Length: 546
Image (cartoon, rainbow, N blue to C red; front, top):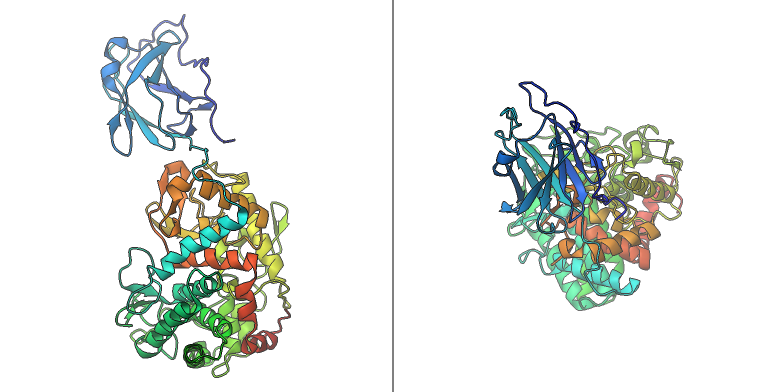
């Protein structure tokens, strides 16, 4: 890789000079470090498998005691790595040279213990540790497929998350692969759209898909707890009872409800045949759709929608839904409702805050119409646009295709420029969005970058950045696939600087992969959702052209 450090065998470290008299000092210190071309660090990344670590000291090393005061270990299993010690610069520079090649993509720790000393017997004040993370193996891990076959394989494998791992009682989508009975309303909306793709591509039969969707909608109607027609973020897949997402978020989540409705309305248009099972499905969906009291979530008629309401805490969460972020679809569906609609003023004052969500600045030479600096995490350009087609979508504030393309291009350009110098970022390896990270979860973006790449970010931007996203898809699969390609498709995230790969899969990340690949290929979901006359009416009411 272009970021891989080149290791040179003839490098001189001037910690002390050959002709120098040994300093008569109580201090014995480390003056410099080097691995290849990288100097004066305690953590080295992209390290060659035959690298050595060179450490310069302030005076001559006592070689008779050096070996017993140095260790080299593979960090993940504490395996001791055999090494030899070499010296140069008049014995002021120590070279730790492994006797075997390092493994690819592995982190090692070299330790210099406190009793490491100079010829005067002066020891280091404290133990010192240095970390070497080796380069990744860039060889291809799988047989090369045609582009079309690769995209199909990704869709089909990822679909298993929603089909094989769907909750057995309700059919709804589990929040993540370790969440047990916790299912997610928004992620289930994504899963419903994934089922539409699967039926279209014959991953399952049309009848199998209808049966699963009837199971889901029956559960939503008959068992799921609702609050003024809106669903909680999380619910129990067996009982339908709301599960608190946070201490006061134990009731309605209007944004998650909008993702669920986006999926249901897409399915209602797709399953249009005059059969008993498809007719029942359409009836179920229409009832669920009509019973969402969108306008009630303006909190007594305020000209804005509110994200949450709790039967216990009321409006205590106090989070107005305002742009720019992932919630455009919430206002569009609220305006489209045939039973509890909002008006345009609520959209203008609530969502756009009278156009305060405009950006207009350029990043890496790319003008961004809306939103925060650098555009925010990439899911802003995905979630609302799984069904809503941004091509040609405009209102008085923005061209939404231009917005999403610019957002994706800026995210790509940021990763290629890599201002924080994280290992592995490149034109092949990019994409920052919300995901698991090594010790938690965060919304990764250019202003909150910790070195974590999330496959769904670049893959789900395929309609916006087809060349750049396809390169990332091929890299994630062919080069990193031995680490990233698993039972339900790509793992949620990885960090090459830390040699960390998630073992998790999240509904809200797996779903957009299937859906946006399909929108790139055939516009299936965009076309089906766009057929809804109610959605057309809502867009017109809010002043959109499309």
